[in-house]
Amino acid sequence: MPEKREEYPYKFFWLYLFTELEDEVKDKNDYKAMYNFITAKLLKCSKTVGNSQKFVDALMEFENPIEKFLGLLALSYLEMSEDILEKAINIMLREKNKNVQEKMFKALLYSYKFYSYKISMKILNLLKKFEYKYELYIQFLENFKDYCNDIRVLKKAEKFIKKFQDNEQLLESYFMRADIYVESKEYEMASKILDLVLYIIEEEKKKRTIKNLDIWICHFISLYCDCGQLKEAQKLLKYLEDEKRKSSEWTKIARGYISQGKIKNALSLIPKISDEMDKDLVLERVALAYAKRKKFKEALDILEKIEGTVIPIDEFIQWLIDIFAESGSTDREIFKRILNLIKLYLKDSPEEINKMEKEITQFIEKKLSIRDG
Image (tube, rainbow, N blue to C red; front, side, top):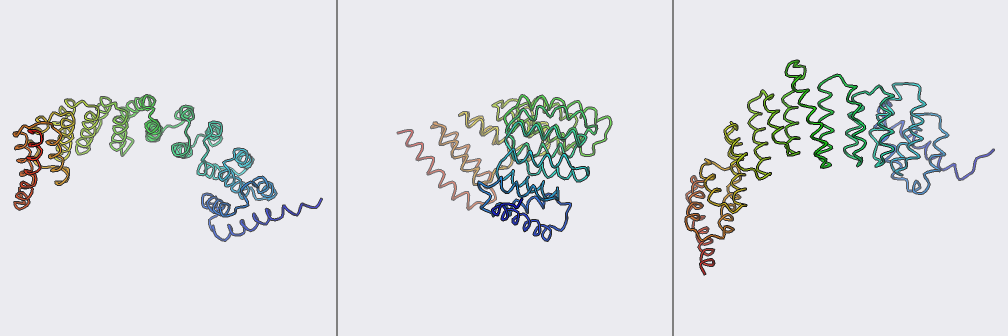
């Protein structure tokens, strides 16, 4: 039976596109580049809007399974169509060449931008067919992190962990999954995953098979801090060998305590911070926390112990002025202490001191006169 005339333009479109694809993408093993090329061409073709079925029907008549698969994948993405995606997946499952099939699956993971629990689970379950390959699982997690908003998928992924034997693979997988939970503010779930990490790190300190274990420990300390689990973060620190890293990680935990309003806890960690700049940074944040609580004398007590400032000088001076302006106090002693601090930080610029002293004195005297009213 002769074909309908109106179907020819759609067949011609695919024929022309695949001819161009042959010329433009030289590496026929680069399915990602091929997929991107097809998607770009479809985006330029306004006829796809409302006509996706005609494009699908025309495409299905071509023999090359790779071209058909990538064409359907691109259409499913542009139309956000699960039906078209199902057709692409069926072509992949019928492919007998295992190497080609795995490349198709990688392209599927790369293009995956659906917000459906059903599709997420279908793609996750397809990992079984590829013997739970670690790199495919990680790629799934990366795409999940960017595009899927259903946390149930991640919970179902738990069983895949048991297939990995390499501790570094386990740590990377745990890290990615905990990071997703933190971004979703599912801190309780993130904490449960992080608790499993401690066992692996304890085991690794004996085996020593992971070269960059210190880096992984720092990553997990950051996640514990994000979850507000600062005591657990401190437990990990005992496994850290690099002393320089230890100082910065103690700083991270101290800042966590400050954000929780636990200033005494933060101050108790100061002796553990070996880097002077890190130490001053924590002390400045403690002083700022005191100032926000209107405890200005305590803030100044700390600032007077710091030999330098991590904050840029101009910002720091403005901050000192703001402390006084917001204090609601007419205590000239606080004013003198603030002025002395400014002189200390500008000791190498006498001209600047004279200029700043005059301006600041006028500013603060004005504030005092208003309050003395």
